[in-house]
Length: 331
Ligand SMILES: NC(=O)c1ccc[n+]([C@@H]2O[C@H](COP(=O)([O-])OP(=O)(O)OC[C@H]3O[C@@H](n4cnc5c(N)ncnc54)[C@H](O)[C@@H]3O)[C@@H](O)[C@H]2O)c1
Ligand SMILES: O=P(O)(O)OC[C@H](O)CO
Image 1 (tube, helix red, strand yellow):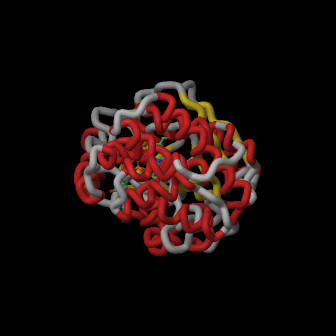
Image 2 (cartoon, helix red, strand yellow; image 1 turned 90 degrees about the vertical axis):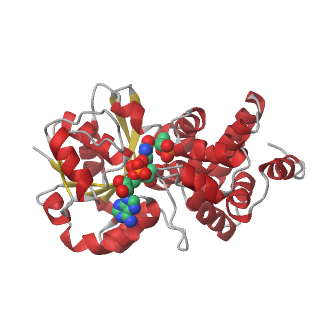
């Protein structure tokens, strides 16, 4: 039997602990705050992250990191992208030898412009073959409600990738494998930025032509960056690309889309941050993705404008005008 640790008891870490337990693992869910761990131990529910969702008995919760990692062959990381490096710096020494480290995160690190798997390899000092990524159209509340969804498990070591695939396969979770770690991670990180733009467009009352144009051109700039970084362009037509982009943009459950709606209503970044209680990764990642694109000479006009709205106080209406007024070119 597999022992799994899930580090981070937010919406996705908690939903993932439920998946792993239902698929047959004994799971320890690590929460930063002891009050959250204690509430899960008492009621089997993480009320702040996933209200009303009962976790299986096979999920135990703790705020003791060493206890959480004890004997874990699979270690799932589900903290906000920008805190991962700091977290792992403390955690690395406690990671069980030869455990597989699985990133559930969808972001790019500020300053370094690194993907989460790169941060893991660097900070934990592990071989890249030990790192696996899970990414796809997986809104935590829907997955927790056991609505059927597919996802991608990407890694460079086939055996580890397949082990993770087996560990999360359920009647309502269909995981596919891939060896395109770069493409899967970029798909997950950039869709958050495009969903911010989609949310802005929604709040500004724009229609389906606008939204379809954003999704399509958003995917085009994602794929452009991916190809420049060595990803397989076909990944962007798959679950971790188009699939996640459509799910995140279309869903009122998306924190990124919702955050974009606040900005589209004319709220400042600070006002939107006060309203949003959970992680909207695109807000910070848009800076890192813009920097990554510029460093590789890749044009990402939507990402550029989202960054300007978020961090330079540009009115979203002005951003739309600039996007629509760009030089004419072939598709
Ligand atoms: N929620 C989803 O539907 C979903 C789905 C797929 C992937 N993801 C990705 O999973 C990652 C985690 O997202 P989430 O939805 O669980 O976020 P969340 O906001 O629900 O929870 C984040 C968790 O991290 C904890 N945290 C905050 N700062 C921390 C720190 N400095 N150190 C350690 N822990 C800290 C919080 O207490 C919270 O438990 C993100 O990268 C997100 O993009 C989320
Ligand atoms: O709520 P969001 O915007 O972080 O999106 C959640 C998931 O990444 C959707 O797949």
